[in-house]
Length: 212
Image (cartoon, rainbow, N blue to C red; front, side, top):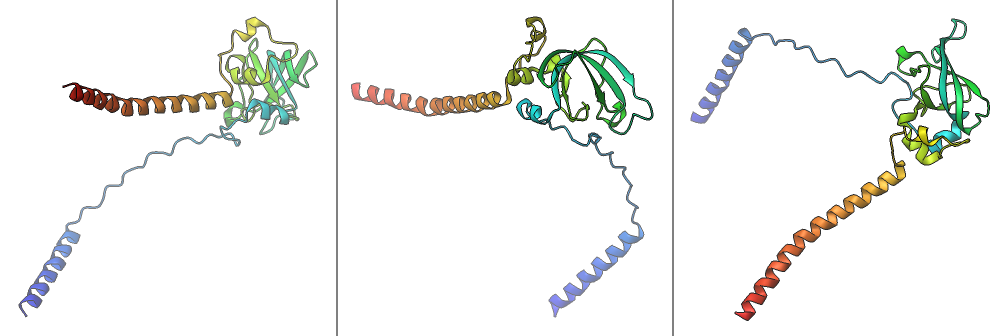
């Protein structure tokens, strides 16, 4: 009987406390959540195939110097095309035997277009519709180290002067292999240090005990 009374009193106390807290409750402050990070607007994302794979699907692959950049007319422009670039072909890997090639790129505002300037040298992966944008491996010559490592210097070969401008980058496969072997070597060194130290210590201790 005593425990029932205590239980009833405890329940009443909880109800009274809940009522008081509800009456004097403070409305929660509404905190504005931070805006989500900007989404990469280009539909293909930020993934690029390896050069040996990208060249298979490309309509033409070449190294070229930007001769001119012009805006397309309203009749020619669309969601994928905003500018037309004329390149002077320096070296070719695929289907770029002409001295000059016209290439279109997307509008810069949508995140897909590439910004070309006259006098710059680019490695261009043009698709079969004469388009080169961020969905391709098209990039300035200085950033095309992986492309040259896998595709070579092209035809005719790029000059030593131009190759010297490229940041040296190993191919993806070699980098992965070197990283794997490097990690295995470090792991083996740590393991040898951890095991070898105690073995040497106890061996010397045993030798000292036997001579003593």
